[in-house]
Image (tube, rainbow, N blue to C red; front, side, top):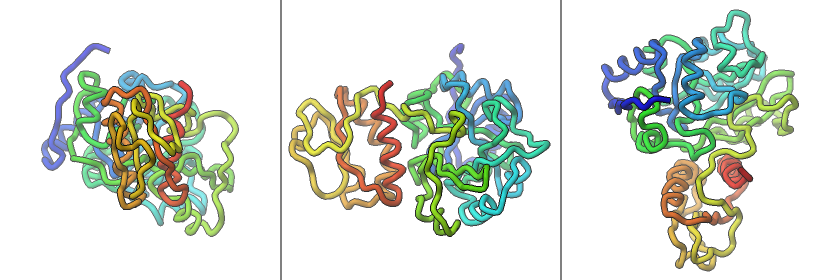
Length: 325
């Protein structure tokens, strides 16, 4: 891609949001905040626009994208919602939940954005800037995380520019995101709601609405939604999970009030939550990983994280960061 200046637009300026929406309608790529992480937006109805996202992110073409809509009514024009999908939409939209449903006849999300699948991934974000931008753009907007493919996801505009300066038209700077991990993805395709990716809505909350457990089996047929690649969210450093001791040449990612042996001599250290609050930990995860990666340490040692609530999403991201690549 030929370099181009990336504009930083103030997200609290209605004129800037209108400017960003106009760029999207013209086929440009614009990053913007959601409640989870910053998304890299493009017109979901236009294949050429979507291809610009793949080029900016250096993203595998077989990985489908999530289409973002301003409300459930707009989303339901793009997909076929069974009773389970409708219950989940009513309970968690707007919010950090993505639903993968059969594509509706006449749906406008293009084939390239769906990676050729007969299903479509849909989300209604809760962030006011995202809501304003989607209404101004007046069309579905695909928005994977605004980073190079496989890298650590961005939770600030500065993170976006670290990866994508000169590769996208603009970023709407709305400060730090609130949730800090991507949306939970649930597929409602065959009468059995299936968890494809843990995220900002805990499994327990979804199962409470459904009245039964989610199916956690990996679906056949390859990648059906974003975030399903085995290696993802990867820093440059090697990642070592469930560390009980920290080596002197390692960076340390800590959680809770207790520190493992050797934490005091770590090359660099970050604490996700000293009190053991999983919501705080999720919000701090990607920023902390980026700072530790910038320390120059060859290994980031990560202490054990609980598996309940948002801990499932945090552990999922860390496991993908630690995968071979």
